[in-house]
Amino acid sequence: VGEYAAKFESLSRHFRFFREKDYEPFMCHRFQDGLKYEIQDSVLPLGIQRFQALVEKCREVEDMKNKRASRVGNFNSGGPSRANYQNRGKQVAKPYNRPQNNNGGQSRPGNQNFGR
Image (cartoon, rainbow, N blue to C red; front, side, top):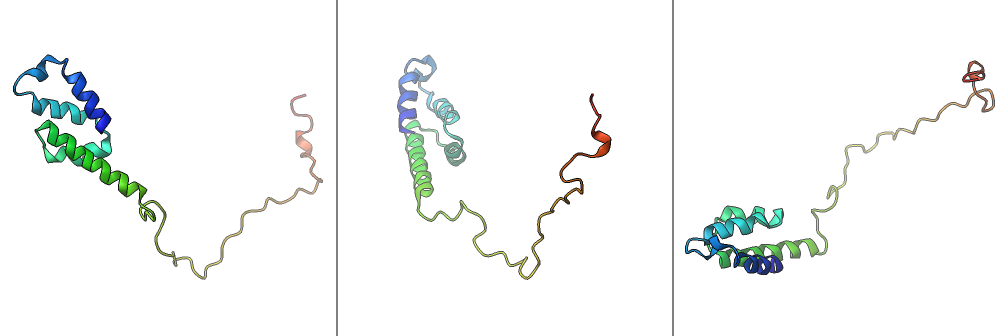
């Protein structure tokens, strides 16, 4: 977010509309459009209209998401958290074994002249 905000600010200086007095709500809207979806999803509903406040909130959200992702023992990333006892005591089906042919691995008699 920090790099994106710095680049956005440097480029916005060249955009004439952003130099006018009521540019901040539109600037915030444009900034939010370029954010990652995970950050955008958290910040957009807040309706922040001041650019610096928006950048700070985006940094907070990014830090929070990074901490959550790097947390040891993240329980949301795996399968079921408790044992599945629904199949307890049931026989496990064995995979289907294809019957061996009686010809010792040779092809069927009707297919010998096929394609000649």
